[in-house]
Image (cartoon, rainbow, N blue to C red):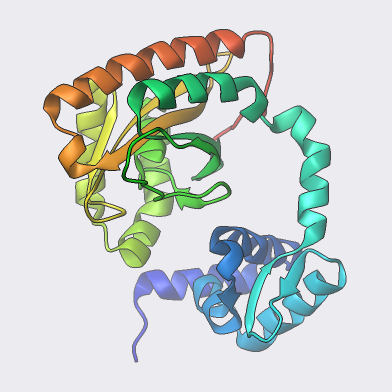
Length: 273
């Protein structure tokens, strides 16, 4: 099978990277896979590395407790040391405790699932969620899920809030991945970005999960940096135009409360190359 030019570039970049970069790439994929884990062959395909290289790196990560092989399975998950290190970093980087009361209030008002998403480089990471009292549960994201910025409602809201030149550079980096892994054309991503900037919030329907609509709104830290987003997801039948407008108003109030809460706190700043 012939490889595309993009795939050839990915493989060349993987081969040119050092062992630390390769190990971090595997850790990101393990974190994305969640409890189900991911197979060695899938890790090799996603990184462009040889199976033997991935096997060697996994053995090293397992030895350091940064990865674990699921018992009776050929799938791998992130290891306990990553959790332990995360506890140490939480005091400096974790905004969940500050935002949790706002999320709970918003979930009660909306009666839908509310997500807190934070930017992590070129990705959006779900760091918290609160389920509302709706009879239909919507779980398109779990805590720890990672997606390229622009794909989900929260990530799209973050991307749209960035300066246009930075957003374009980011699309150049993640666009091919979104199109390849999620079958989502870059042209549609750019249209969604324009809609978000015009409306002031993101809106996706059936993009990630069939039958689900989600709306997102970004928020900033005390220095004006785009730090993350809140999003609300519900079934299409519950997310009509009037309800979406009401949810946007509730989310705007939640954003004001989050930004007021974040005053005086400083977080890692992203410098786009």
